[in-house]
Structures are given as structure tokens and as C-alpha cells.
Length: 309
Image (cartoon, rainbow, N blue to C red; front, side, top):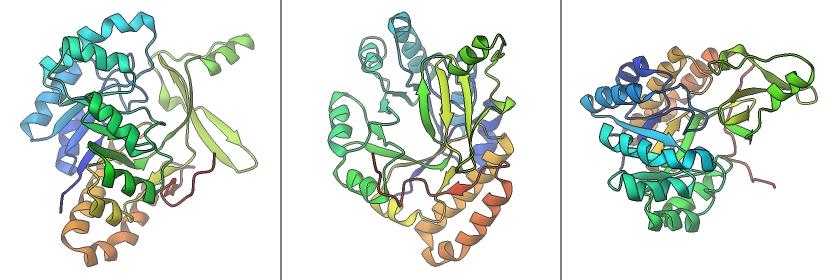
């Protein structure tokens, strides 16, 4: 039985080695000029450092180039992708076909993983991008378990899913919160993209708080709960899903390391000893609940829901 990759989005280069020691086998890094909703900002120097550390330990590093690109950034893509290739990055994650076109010209050896957040909903689309040059498809977060398994059964490319962390509910290229503050005659400082300052949209009817932050890519509204399926991995592993992602956005390094350690144990036991995996499920859930940020519960996302549009 194949062991899926355990992919984590680290906050900084100092997280790389501890996360590897906790069980991570791959990392997604990048800078917000080119990538969306990263757990931390990684300059070119940081990316090179991450690659050096990870490769020494047998882990992989992917770079996020999945932004929504307008004309002003298209000319930069070739140089950035060439740098990623030269730095030894194992793959670039993209959504915009402009990245694919630029990679063909400037970094033809660089592997490409297709990810658009929302449109990876069927195996025809995954295979379409596979035939265009992508070797992996990152599935939409709104899919249920049956849909994921069916896609994997029919996919010609690797399949990646998110198993833990918050998900994005809305994005606008506009600075909505900043513009609102300006309209009121106030100033909202987003210098350094201070996600830790804690802006929320409060839904009184459901008593939900939706984290909201702004960066160079606009405004992002995130889910009120964190997805957690550490106790529901059997079907995904049996189906041969290639990569399980733990998203670290708006989390601490300590939290990420602890969650990674638990998923490492869960994945290995699910493959090697199903009975022991079953016995430990409740303990993992209790431990994760105990370290969750205040006002953030865990749930199974859309894995066991029928999506209604």
C-alpha cells in the first residue's frame, strides 16, 4: 500500500527541520507576490534555504505560483520560474495558464502542479491539465469523500487533498476592508501583512467568526472551523491519494509541528496496523481539540456532505 506524502505549509525556514522530524515529507512555500494564502513569506533566499534543508533530509519543496496574474506581473513569471528551477524546487504550483506558458519557455524541466482552489472538481479537468503538462492536480476543498475517490480512480495525474486546517471561503482582488476603513476616514495598517492582528467577520445567527486578512493579492475570508480528518484516513489511503496537505495559515509553529506529528503517526498506523489506528482515533481528536486556537472548532469539512450550490 502506498504511503501518501505529508505536505505542510511552514511559517518560516526555521520550521522546516522540526517539521521533517515530526514527519512532514514535503513543503509548500513561496512569496505572496506570486502565491496565494501562504502560511509565511519566503523570499528567494528563504526558498533556497528551505530547499537545501529539505533535500538534505530527503523531503521535497514546492513553490506556490498560484496567484491571479494581471498583465503587470506576467513579464516577471519567466525569471521567477527560472529561479525556482535553478534553486532545485521540486515543483511549482500554478492555476493560471500564464504560468504554464512561461514555464515552457523559461523552466521547461520544472514540474508543475495544477491548483485553482475551486475548479478541481472532476477527473476530466484534472486529466486535461495533465495533458497540458501538469503532473499533479490539487482538488477543490468542497468535494466529498466519494467524489475524491472517484477522481483518484480515473486520474492520469497525482492527486492532492487538504486534510487539515482552514479553507478559503472568499477572495477579492480588492482591498475591501482597507477601503472600508478609508471610507470611514480611518487607516488600517496592513504593513507586513499582519495576519496575527485578528480581524473577523462575526455571524451572530450562527455564532461564527470568519478570519479575514488582506495582502498583496487582495482580501481573503476564511472558514470559521478547521478541517480535521485524522480519524477518517482509511478510504483515502486505500484509494491511493498521493498527497495529504496540512495548511498552516494563521497557525503557530508549535501547533503545526504537533499536528504534523499526530498525522504522521495516524498515516503510518492506518497503513501498518488498522486496529491500532482505530484505537487511537479518539485520542488524536482530543489532543487536537485541546490545542485548537480559541473560537476555532474542528470538523470534517465537506468530506461527508453533499455540496449544494
